[in-house]
Length: 113
Length: 114
Image 1 (cartoon, each protein chain N blue to C red):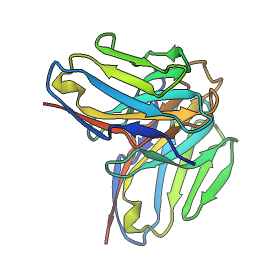
Image 2 (image 1 turned 180 degrees about the horizontal axis):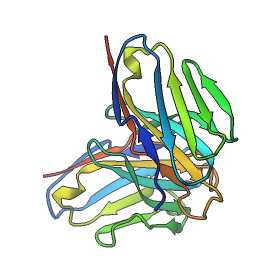
Image 3 (image 1 turned 120 degrees about the horizontal axis):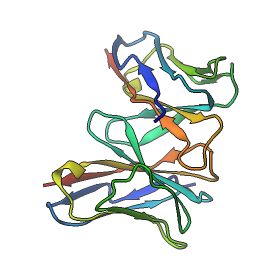
Image 4 (image 1 turned 90 degrees about the vertical axis):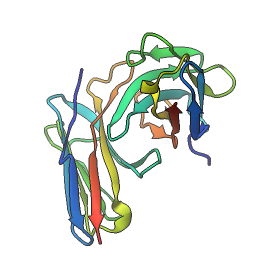
């Protein structure tokens, strides 16, 4: 019974490149949430998606960041033209239905050089 | 936006001691979750609480949903070195909105000294 899967676990990018982070929710879960965690800080909500729909993107930066959760395949968090300030751990969580307990993946640690 | 306060922010304890931490807010919640994050890993769910006054245990961990519905407590008995990590609380607002409806606290960082 696999949990939430994220890949890659570590990603290094140079300034200006694109970063693509993938998240496969737990089996039977159709709701995905993305969070960002800066070093020594808590979890900051970014975006909440259901299959093919963005439900809440109130925590997403207005530029360079986008997220999708297609009908088939994992959810993708995409960061274009990365800057050093994007360096952080990005966590994905999933739940079977809205308003239910969220289970987290192991995270992707992005380092921008 | 809604905020959760966690205290203490960090704590250093001796192995074998009991630990107490709490999570408070000015808002009312209908669910409380406690997670633990090991260094370099994602948060792992420890305990979920769904009713005011509920007291739930998971091994050496015990958590309570405050009767005012504005707070929750987590206790760890007889701490061991692997208890080191960051403990996050998360509360679900009441009523739960359609969007992101869990609010996360900033975490309590626990260090256990041998």
